[in-house]
Image (cartoon, rainbow, N blue to C red; front, side):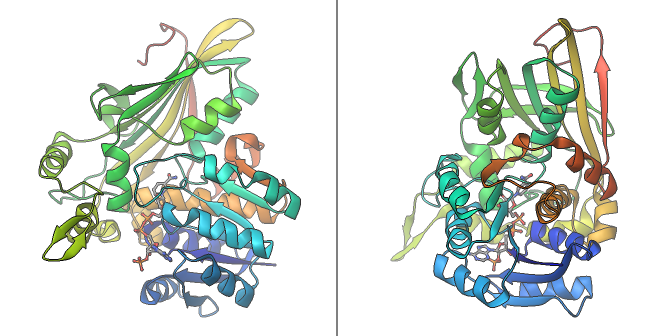
Length: 401
Ligand code: NDP
């Protein structure tokens, strides 16, 4: 019997809340906290469980989070607000002795800088306190890390090349919209491309490297090389990896809108002066773009996210692809959210479930690839994200298709 405190009830938090409510034998009490209380109340209403509690919380301040933790005494905090709050919430968990889980690494609101170091620094203190933090338990990062741990455990003696490929083949019919928080999404996409090869990080101009790939369940799409945070933990935890890259698909229409917005300065995070008011253009842009939550009923099509892995087993070269296909409309029917929120929220629930069941039980700060992949993979099949795997015999080592 456990209490879960879910902080942030936007697109992802909504799915986590619905999914936790489906597993009441583990999450016997659910508390929803959000900066705007009405959003938490709306999620509670959509679930229809009168026992769920809601509370207003600005999680930017550690003291506010501590107050809410002391009031509701949760066994775990699932943080699905924004990456800006990772450290304030981790600090509150540390001070109150409660387990922590998130889906995205810390970002400073003022700098385009994404890395795990500030969160990994909590390892010794979480360990001393006897509590656990699980970082990045969404799909990518999250499931992709587990896919690679599974490949290493069961199919490879040595992993050489990894390509993580994220395809959203959905169509929401809007001229331009992002499928998760617009501010976080655009910050991520407009940074330089970055990948790891031969022991060092290599940089490319934003979205300049691309190629087509034929995604199962979706079809051929153009995918673009980007930096993504799981690359950082994976090269640390699997130092044998020679090269790791992350690719995401975008339509030509999406990229054209993004280019125009960039060219006119609307994606900048530097404040500008407007009639005496300091305005951050990207924040203003977020305010005028569609709320990703509103895309749920509009989006049709599928996502396909997976990992293409090349390496050796018994000294024989081997190429292996593991992926999930998820249908936007099926997600909306189940939990009232589109597949991007669903593919993030389900793994967050699963990570928390395994921690509460002591199946994943460690002291300190962990990324998912450091834990046994088997129970997580079983739960993906059980809770709505079935995965598939296949091997290819004929290939040129290092090539994608
Ligand atoms: P949304 O913008 O839909 O939701 C964010 C929610 O957090 C909103 O309800 C917002 O409330 C709330 N919030 C923001 N600031 C605070 C605060 N200071 N205190 C309390 N609540 C706050 O975002 P998403 O649901 O799309 O994304 C949530 C997280 O999931 C992000 O960190 C994102 O990076 C991550 N993500 C991870 C993925 C993965 O695969 N690992 C994929 C997609 C997303 P309000 O409106 O009141 O501000």
